[in-house]
Image (cartoon, rainbow, N blue to C red; front, top):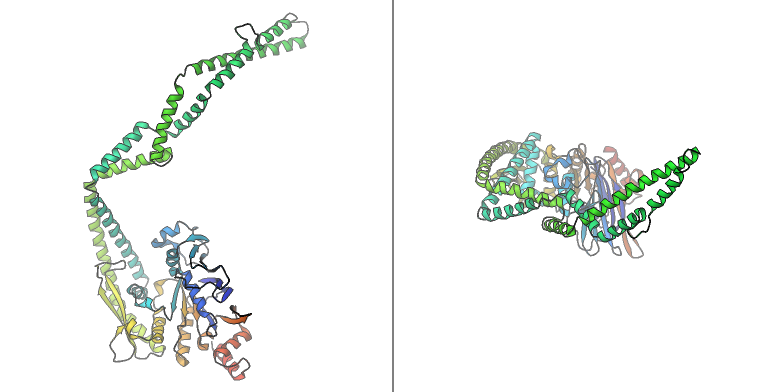
Length: 560
C-alpha cells in the first residue's frame, strides 16, 4: 500500500504530506483547488511525463516522493531482475521519487538511488494502478484487457501464464543465439585467426601478477645500483679498512680485544667486558662478509636493468591491449579459449540449438493452448459477472463480451491470442469496443466493475481520479459502496466530488486553496470530526452553518 505521499513545489502546493490509511481514502476539495495536482503526482511516481510549467512559480524544482509497503515477493519478478541487483534485498519499504527542475528536466529515484523513468514505470505499475477520467485508454489496450481476463481466471491461470512467458522468453533467446551463430558463419575463420593469435601472444608472454611485482622491485633496485654499490663499499671500508692502510672499526676493536686479553683472569667484570667486545668483533666480521657478497652480486648483473625493462614493457603492452591489468589479460585469454572452442564446434552447436529450439517451441505451443482454453472458459463467466456488477451501478441491461482473436504474429508475450472487451450499454444494442461504445461516466463504471474481479492481479493500491464524474444520486452511492468493498481487500485512493462517495472513506483528505499577497497556494490536510462534517456539507452545496445540510452530512457518515 501507499503509506506516504510527499509533494514539494508542485503547481499550487508548496509542501504537503499525506499519510494514507488502509481501505478507502477520499480526497476532496473545491473545483480548481488542486485535486488534479495529486493525481499528477501519482502519475509522476509511475514514470509519467511531467506537464509543462509544473514547478511552482518562484521555486527551482518540484519533488514528489511515495513510500510504499511492498507486497511479498515483489522483486522476485523476472522482469525486475536488473533493477533488483541495484536494490537492497527484501526491503521493508519501497521509496519512489521524482524531481522536476524548472527547466522541465526530470530525474527519478528508487530507494534514494538514481534511476530512470522506465524503472519507475516497471516498479510503480506493480505497486499502484492509477485510473482517471482520461486513463481509461488503458482498458482499450489489448494487453491491459488480457490482464483483466487472466486475473479473473484466477491464480492457476497466472501461474500458467508465467510458465508460458518463461517458455516464450526461452524461444526468443534460442532464436537470437542461433541467428547470431549463423550470421557469424562467414566471419568464423577470421575470428578464429584473431582469437588464436591473441591467445598465443598471451600464452607466450605468460603474465604472472607475482612475477610482475618482483620485477618492479628489482627494477627499482637496479636503477639505484651505483648508489647502492657506493653505500655498501663505504660501509665495508669503515668496518674492514682500505687497501691504502686506513684502518677500520674491526682493527680498532681487535686492538681493544687484545688489551683486555692481557689482563684476563684478574677481574671477572673486566673479563665479561672482554667477552662482549669479542662478540661485537664477530658481528662485524659477519657484516663485512655479507657486504662483500652483496657487492659481488651487484657486479654479477651486467645488463640486468635492460632485461627487466624489456620484460615489464612486454607485460605493459598486453595490459594496455586487454584491459589494464594482469588479471584482465588472463581473463581475456580465457575468453579467447572459450570463443575458439565455440567457433570450432559451431556446426555441432547449431545442431544443438536447433534441437533445443524445437523443444522450446513445442512447449510454448502447449502452454499457449492451455492458456487459450482457460481464457475461453473464463470469457463467458467474466461477461456475466460484469453484467451483474453494472446492474448494481445503474447500468441495468448493459452487457460485456470478451473477444479472443489469434495473435497477429502467432505467439506474443502473453499467449497466442489478443483480447478485446466489447460492451453494449443498453439492451438490444450490438456490442462495440469499449473505446467506441461508452461515455466517460459509463466507462468509469465499467472500469469499476472490472476492477476487483481479478483477484490474482496482486496487492496494488488502486487510485481513481474523478471516476464518479457525470453520476449522482443512487448511482453515486452504489459507486461509493463498490469502492468501499474494494477497500476491504486492498488500499483504494479516490479523488472525488461526491459526498455519497467521500462519506464512505476510512480516511478523508481536504484540499483548500487560498490567495496570499496575490499568490494562490493549496494545502492538504486530513479531516475528521466537525471538520469532516463541514466538508461533506460543502460537497452537498450548502453553507457550513446550514443545519439541515449538517444533519444530512452526519446521516451520510453514520450510514457508512
